[in-house]
Length: 65
Image (tube, rainbow, N blue to C red):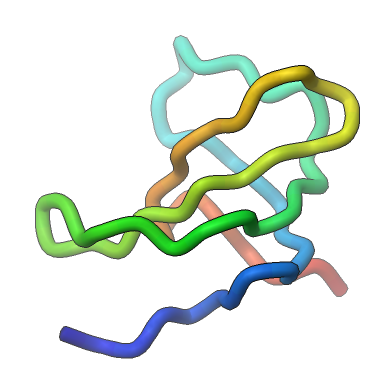
């Protein structure tokens, strides 16, 4: 498997592929690397604007400028 594109502590933008998944803001922090699912790395992410964590696929994330 390929190396992870992001590491714990990285700030990322979250752009969910599923239109039914609202994202309150775009800036999230990577909390944990998750196992691959469907050939794609997953990450546990969180923003300070929400009380809960999310799981995002690597393709839904982009590095903050």
